[in-house]
Image (tube, rainbow, N blue to C red):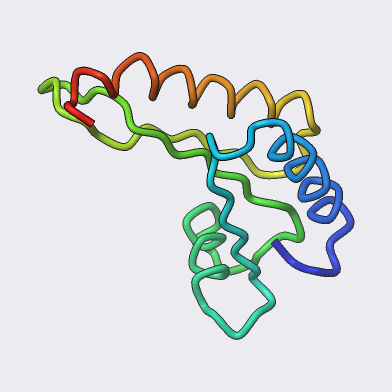
Length: 108
């Protein structure tokens, strides 16, 4: 996200509310597009390969999930734009449940 984007600021505040409730069940990584790191812009390019970035938050949820061969793989969901606390909470809770349901069989 960008530090001067109002939707991004709102999304981050909602994420922090939800993270406060989930404790150590979730790791949050904030990638700023307006920092010196190019990774933020690279992330936006995935969604907009034309090179015209939008001032919207990009939120990505990652979790371990069962792959087609039964081994662990990365499951993910992402969205552009401000989605609100309820949406964030729903997807994070789903990711935690998916991980918990499947990780026992992976010997973790």
